[in-house]
Length: 101
Image (cartoon, rainbow, N blue to C red; front, side, top):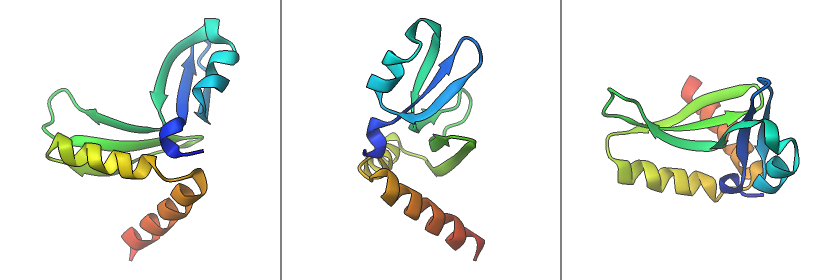
């Protein structure tokens, strides 16, 4: 699946499922659902002028990039969203190693 087809679901009983399709989420315990977010999430803080593109996975969450302009953040999120899960995993590993160098 592509990353833009995957979501994180949070439930009333404080459990969560990560990187699942909407079909999966809605077919498993829908009455207990509290919130659904994209696995690759674009957001802006209340007081910050910065736009964040975050990844929320199973046991892992991180900001992939920050942007001053919404259009730039949207373009970046779309590029990441078109990656398959395997492509994203490889990209993320390579990005994190490059950041350490």
